[in-house]
Amino acid sequence: MGGSSMGGLAALYAHFRHPDLFGAALCMSPSLGFADRKIFDYVAAQPKPWTSRIYIDAGAKEDGGSMVADAERLVHHLRERGWDGGVRQRPPRPLCSLPPPQLGPHPSMRLPVFSFFLGRPGIRALFLMNSPVTGRTMRKTMMPLLAFASLALVPTALAGNTVLAPHSGTVTATTYNPDGSFHGAVDITPSAPCGYWGVSTGFVGSLLWNITINSTATTCTAATGNVALHTFADGMAFRVKDFLRTPASADKTCDRCQIGDSGINTHLQVNKSGTKDTSWYSGYTTQGEVIDLGEIIGVIN
Image 1 (cartoon, rainbow, N blue to C red):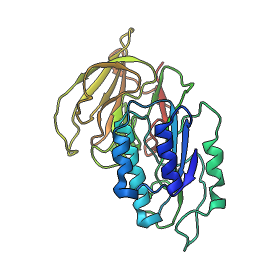
Image 2: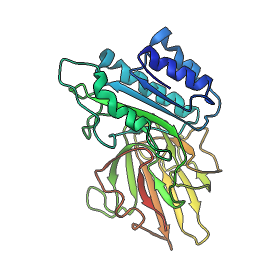
Image 3: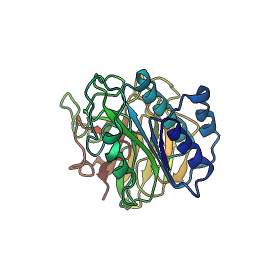
Image 4: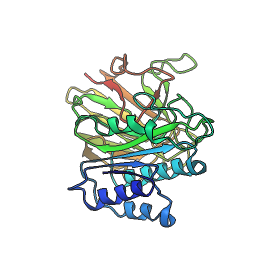
């Protein structure tokens, strides 16, 4: 089900109330601010999510930028309820840009949204909250760009040894640190303020995670040293480090579950025979790359 403005808001409500009938919702410039933003309370009260897709399409300067802010708030509420999704830095391809003085996307320029919305089953869709111009968020962009956002819990065909980005951000270190010293892991600096995003384990497949809390800090002044560790049968170890502690920071067996909130950065490391392995991310990600939540950053063999 899809709609624009109040129709977009109605599509959201219909999707939540009748998921058996409306397995996906396309919300173009949805009126999330209607009735003092009661939609957020409604979403916060939803049960565990079902297999579904939610797509949000918004102009960067619609309602003075509040449209994007409300969409990001909706993302946050949905993720708190267990939906799998997050901010992406760019769409698969730019959808369109609009010349001034238009502030909202013209209907004819929204046609690419429908092709993405009606894409073949099995495609993992994620939030696209930022401008297609790499490195420029919609809060800061000077052009009224059309951004496309989506939230999804859909079947995937990813291999069980694939590692996905635990949140969106920028890769700030891989084999070497910016100063040239050896690093041997992947560090991702979040694309949002401290603690804004949840941090997932990233590994595709159900694993037992041992959580060690070394810091209860709730600020991002330094790396926390908090660790989620899985040790494979052959002794190889995969670590996700430096997240902020939350109630989710406890030992568990899960597939890409949340283990904490984003800190100053997130460190992903593989050790083989007691030494850092760099082959698992080689060819998948590089220092300086802007990545999306759910984007493949490596494969552990």
